[in-house]
Image (cartoon, rainbow, N blue to C red; front, side):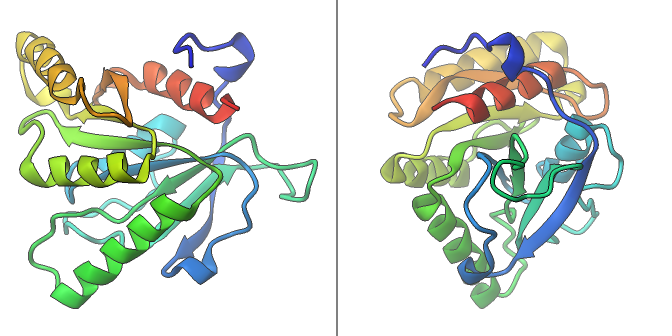
Length: 217
């Protein structure tokens, strides 16, 4: 698959709306538009990145309390009926953050089961964007998630968040190190996107990548 986006694939729609929170697989919406999911450790800046991507301050809920997102939260562009022939061009799915040790174990287990049942069984899922905090790089638990994505043969791409918190030479070094770490992973897309929700860096690249992935047949 080419990483060069077709011109018609790069138009990122606006505005977006929240349509559904999914606490269990039986509550998933019918399979329709291509889905793009966002995963990452709690407090990686996932909600902030989604809000920055769509240019809306409060679409995805942000919180100072890690682990607040406990469902699969679905967002779609406004103005589509959802009927056959009038489906949105893409749906964004905010997945529960992982690695929040303070949550009760049964709650963590439920989140984990929901996320990976979704990853394994959703035909319309086109790609997972796995968010990595630029201040910390890939942690052991991120590697474990990549192992599961590889095993499930789910295409995923790494996105560095909060790059404004480190110096530009460190971003360049981290990009190279991250690329090397995923080089032999079978389901990893061979490119890493560096972003800053606060400064807007990398957002256009990520929007174009999302629309290209969504358009891929």
